[in-house]
Length: 503
Ligand code: MLC
Ligand code: AMP
Image 1 (cartoon, rainbow, N blue to C red):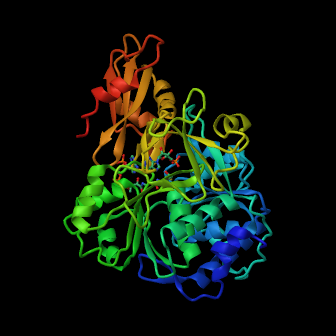
Image 2: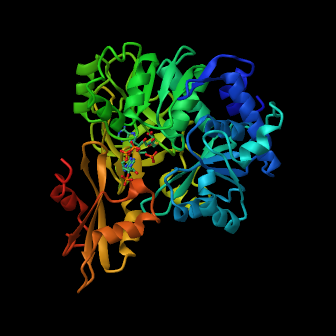
Image 3: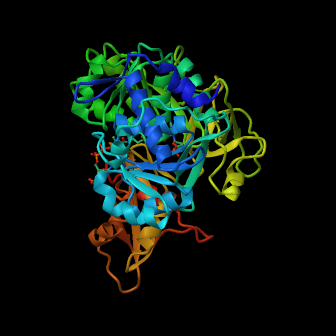
């Protein structure tokens, strides 16, 4: 095939007048109309000078237009780099510089903030808004509705997704066409997606979950999506009756359960609820089953690997577990110190290998070598265990990471910003249980001698440095941080001490 990803996900739908995206204004975009839009965008991308292998960075609001940029990148062979719409200019500067993106797509409202960044990195900046306006859309408006699909191989890069690191420095995970396509094929089959499915899509499309898992599977199966700009409870309740499947982070499910309108009748048309990106509490799983009669199917994945494990479609979906390794994924539990495989039932680090595992970190061979073994096993940083029946349970993390509402926050990155504030001697950032977000970010601060800290002033000061979801929901001044004999801050103690902050 000329371009495996484009051909399998998009090209096959050419000429099909079947519904693809149901949008909030009540209209429906067919597969064919979507492809024609994507082709025009592919022209605009190449007109801007991009060639196969070049990077396009997009910080744009979720909409069919934003999704068409992904399709246009696949068709033109350009590497798609989606960015969280919450990222601040300071964060964007790094991603755009590090990736060497040649074209940056932003919203019209962000143009003033993005212009100096694009200029500094010699990239072209164009605007694309959710309603299909902006100078990028204008440049595409009169271009042809077909585009000569760029020839690509399965090993060529399709996307670059940045993921934070324990050192505070984000790393670009290089995902090839085959990485994405193999996983999409496996999951479509495993979860029985067909052209009859209508997926209620309320996740962001700048991360693996909403972009690849949800979208690629629907495209491969030829189904449709109810494409919402984000999670809005009333809208979800209104749309659920015409959906057949939902993919969400656990916060979606706890928010739905908190609403009395959410019951078995409302979801009579649904066949599948899938949860991932963060741990789903057993309690939520049970509560959900009592309310709706459905057992949520939990799966486990990450940016570097797409999906690794899943509870079964048929058979027992076991609460508190992430199910079995997917058919083409090898998973082992190893000793973090030696890398040796541990006996069945022991807790250790989870390592995975398969066609889904990424190509390495963009221009970071040392980081890649630390996590991706020469034999192809990727060290996930998650701690897990396999029970006698083969179900995998994630019991913790071997990395200092907080997952808040499905977004990853690396404490180091927040601590660096807090430590840089006047009057702060040092800080420790921890995750504590939160009823809505699963975990909430909390900062524990020590003042420099003779200084008094003002949490509100500190919060304001980091406001334009870090995306909002990374902001500590609470800042707590203390006199000292607990340390072990090696001088390392004992975050476990802090987590225990502040465990009841939000409950
Ligand atoms: C929003 N806020 C958050 C937050 N989301 N704070 C912490 N953590 C979050 N996840 C902030 C807002 O900026 C706002 O701040 C305040 O919290 C209240 O916002 P809200 O209106 O309640 O939030 P909402 O917009 O409803 O968003 C919550 C959410 C959203 C859970 C719907 O975060 C979300 O869609 N999460 C999904 C993330 C995801 O797709 N992860 C997949 C990663 S891929 P303020 O200060 O202005 O009040 C991956 C691999 C895999 O992990 O396995 O899937
Ligand atoms: P990200 O780097 O944003 O892709 O996040 C990946 C991380 O999310 C994994 O390494 C896990 O720690 C976590 N994760 C994903 N799915 C699950 C799940 N079902 N249960 C627990 N943790 C999960």
